[in-house]
Image (cartoon, rainbow, N blue to C red; front, side):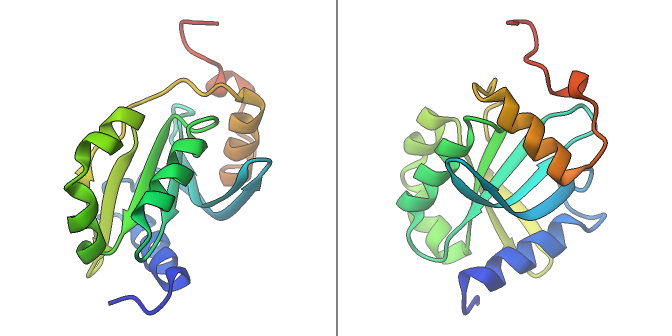
Length: 150
């Protein structure tokens, strides 16, 4: 269905912004470069939680590794795959759950969550704040503080 990874990211980002998306409340940004790499799409929710999304057409294990790395700054991290690749990846659901990473697909204007990401407390809060500011300029720092731990 998707000729390139860039096309997958573009369709995902467009669908993400629609009112019908399960992530519709997020303020989003494509291509967030950071010290550990680059996230394909990031988003921030009104409560300050940061979401990171990594997309791949075929190499789901590489994508899972990148998504896990994003949990250093994101509260929620997801892998975005075409349905055919997601079917293969979902057979290893325990790998996603062990890392707390979610799995989504996008097709025909709809995002489907196959595995829900676990909320994590980021360890690089300076990067969490940078992601929040990039996705939604003007977000106050108090929304991006580590909750009860510090």
